[in-house]
Structure formats: structure tokens, C-alpha cells
Image (tube, rainbow over all chains, first blue to last red):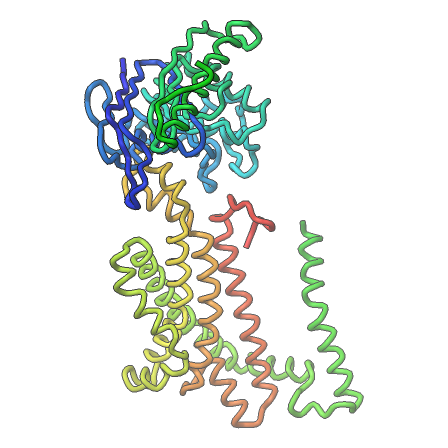
Length: 261
Length: 258
């Protein structure tokens, strides 16, 4: 069982920009936690710190109580763009994520994953020959081949059309159900957060911080057409309004008051 | 595929062949004298005579050996130095300004000092060619390393690759296209510099053939040497492209090849 604990995490860049202040997020084993917020509220910074690509100015990231520094074998990531290596075939791109796995087992997993992402028989193709959605599927497979305990997703579906996004949500949930990694997904899409997550962490900007955390109690598999889904979605939207009001209040220098609450 | 290839050749040869035929006719009909600009038949005859006596092969071998050695030394040095300054900020600050200043010196300006330092024989010639090849390869490698996509390097980091692993698995393939392009321009400069080197005093080589033709008033030898240069340059570039093409199959470019 793996718990990811982000405690007191802050990031101030060399130019003095305070990107994140005192973030606290705990994701228990197998949880899907969505980090929801607008542009510039530090979502991507948070994910980069967690992935070990940047160093925090303060605070810790711990896996099962053990603080980690830099990248970690238990953590894998999918970025906003597929970031496939153009000089490797699709199969080799997937295998790239499984550096620590022995050769034959890695090949077996590549074959399995290609089938799971609907690209069986396409392992020898070049990334340039795939559509954007297919490339992102390959990126997901690459991130999962090493069976990571924690999977970080940085707005991985934001550049895709609605149809492709829907099918990738299904794919992600299928793979999650099978492998059960703890998922931290950054998004600005309310629907995506409600459909995928067990909990939604609402962020607000200047500097980026947690505004509130909401639990999504909807049963899985989730149906977007039921009233409960709509109610939950509206609750999250109200939360966003509260975050916006709080941000406005901070900027104007008075206490947090929202017309919506 | 074969028909397209044949058509490509025919199209490429159309203009030189047409010009050659026109010049041949002009000389044969007495419209042009043909003494300083001999017609193709004279050039073929001269080339055949040079080949039959073994002279042409000797000159070609001498020139190609110089280009090969000079290119090899210059390309290896340029690649290594480019890698060093590309990978290390300190090395770049320390070395790059001096190398750029040296690059600004006109190539011919090196000839007298190389002759003084290295003598009139092979070493000075090879040094001049290697120098000519070094700069484009160095510059290509340096700029290629500096423009490697940070996002792809981060992929390597997330999946746990070491600095060396990232160099081998990400940086190297990413710089290959630019590096190969710089090798090609280095090879072109190698041919340019071999002429300069052979003009500064040689007893064999196509550059010698040029100089000898000038001194003897043999326009046909000069033109034969020039045409052989063109053919050799094009052929070696073709070999380089053919050797490196498999490395660049993944490129998503307009033509899909160099």
C-alpha cells in the first residue's frame, strides 16, 4: 500500500515569483486525486515537484512516510503533450518506460499494453504516423509499463477533441482498475475531475495553494447522465466560485465573501 | 521507384548535356575557337589519355586520401569539441569565444603559418583540410546539443535514466540530424580546402593538375580536374547520405530524407 504525502510544499523561483505556498495533499493507495484550478495557479509546478523534475523551496514529498528527493522509481508521469521519442518505434517508446524490467518480461508487457491501448500490431510504427490521441495512448502505456505505484498526469487530455478524450478516460480507468496506481491528475476540466477522481483538490492562484478539498462519492463506473453526477458537478462549480471569490478578496484586501455561499 | 529514379537522373543531366552539345556544335562549326574552352570531346579525350597513363588515378587517389584523412581528423575533433562545449557550460564559456575568433580567420590566411610550422609536405595540407572541416562540424554539434528539447530530456529523467543514459538515449539521437548536416557541409569544405592545400605546393593531386594546367596553358586539363572534383564531391556526399539515411528514418520532414 502506497501513500503519497505532500506536506508544506512551497516553490519560489529564482526571480522571486512565488508559484506555490504551503501545499498539503495526501493521496492514499489507489486513490485518484484531481488537482483542479485555472491557468497559472501552480498545478503544473506541483506535478513537476512531485515528479522530481524541480526542487521545492520548502516542504517534503514522502512515499509511505519516506521523504523523497528527485525522481523516484515508484513515480511515473504522462505529460500534456505525448513527448514520445521520435527516433524510437511505438513499441520501443513503451519499452522506454520499463528500464528496470528484464528484457523478455518487458517485451511481453509491451505486447500486452499495445493490445490494451488498441494498437496491437502497431509496435513497429513511428510516432509521427500516429494521431494525437494514439500518441497519448502510447504515452500512457509507457508510463504504466513499469507498474508505478504513483502515476502523475499533467493535463494529458487537454489537447484532444471531446470524443478522443472520452475514450482515453475510459482507457485510463480500465488500466487503473487493473493496476491500481495512486493517480494525481492535474486538470482545468471540471467534468474530467468529477468523472475520474475520488477527491478534487481545488487550487487558487497568487500564490498557488489549496483552496479546499472535495470528496467525489459517486459510485464507479460513473454515469454522466444521472442526477447525482449533475449535483456533484454543480458542487464542484460552487467550490470554484468560492475559490475565485477568495482570490478576488485577497487581491482587493478584504475578507473572503462570496455571493454564492 | 526505378522509373522515378531514372527520370530524376535524366532531369538532373538535361542542362549539362544540353550545354555540352551546344558547345561542341559551336566549336565544330567554327562559331567558337575552343582553345580556352575546349569542347566536351576534347575533354573526354584528355580524360581518357590521363586515365590510360595512370596519371588521373594517381591524382584522384592523392586528393581523396588527403580529403579522407583531413575530413576524418576534422570531423572527429569538431564532434568531440562540440559535444564538450555543448554539454558543459564551463567548457563553453572557456573555449567557444576563442574557437569563434579562430573561425573568423580566412582559411587561406592559415597557409603560410602551416607551411612554416608543419613544412611544405603532407602534414600542412592535412592540417588545413582538417581545420576547414572542423568549424562547421563543431558549430553544428554545439548548436544541436543546445537545442535538444528539454521536454524529451525530462522524459528520460522521469523514467530514471542517468546523465550518461540520457546522453546516449536522448541527446545523441536528437542531435543526429543536425550533426549529419554539419558533416555534409564539412565534407564540402574539405574539398574546397584540399584545392587550397594542393595549390600551395604539391607534386600530385587534382589541385596540382589544376596548377599544372594553368602553367602549361592546358585548359582541357584544368577543366577535366574541375569536372572530376565535381563528380568526386557529389559521389562522396552521396555516400555520406546513403550511410546515414538509416539513422534518420524516423524524421517527420517534408521529404522524409536529407
